[in-house]
Image (cartoon, rainbow, N blue to C red; front, side, top):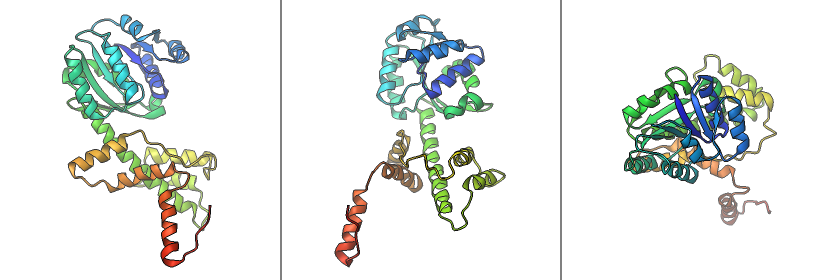
Amino acid sequence: MEIGFIGLGKMGMNMVKRLQRDKHRVVVYDRAMDLIKQAEGVGCISASSLADLVSKLSSPRAVWVMVPSGAPTEETIRAVAALLQSGDIVIDGGNTQFHDDVRRAAELKTKGIHYLDVGTSGGIWGLQVGYCMMVGGEAQDVTRLAPILTTLAPENGWAQFGAHGAGHYVKMIHNGIEYSMMQGYAEGFELMSKSEYKLDLAKVANVWMQGSVVRSWLLELAAGALAQDPHLDKLKGYVQDSGEGRWMIRDAIEKDVPVPTLTTALFTRFRSRQEESFAEKMLAALRNAFGGHAVRKS
């Protein structure tokens, strides 16, 4: 199948490599010329601009957008949609908020342009093992893109979950669960790192991978990280979030659904970015004020 692909970052580059490996015709564009050259080196057809990319695709065209969420995705889709024609399709494979998918699909429909949202999980390992893909949109468009989705995913690794926005909604929940799982591992391993038994944490992770009820790919990655840096001395405990956890909490509030574990995991990430917490200074000040407890001066 033929597809245009916009965005050649860590995931995008591996995705086009996987597509090329399965002999799809892939026309690529990225703002970074060196990334275009790299994709060209594995057999992709390079484009010098969005207009050039569209001109090199046969009608009806399919264009996959894989750029950072938010403004970059919005601007890219608007720009490429202005170049497309009725019957063409745009696929957003990034981490878009599902409400935006619903709005965007309606806007594109007025021009006769089709739209799919595809929540994509797999990170930098997707080239080897494939990408889990959660799809939202109309059934006829999903059928049309099935050859691409089948190449990118492992066996049984993609599915349509509903109308526009459903794919990114399921991916949002997926990422929220991911936050919580990582937080659980992080806290457990911190406690073990303080143990009087001087535990080999990489060894613990490896043993837990053998039939334990907490085994997972995340645990496998933890074992690899600990094998390379047993005390994680090379890392700073600064953790970003990409937005999905915040969206999930908002959705939970709107639906009156308690998600305490996810909320704690997200707020822990916020705390990791503070050099020093004002709240903790306030705690120290109050303990000193009511009980005369010692404080440490900065």
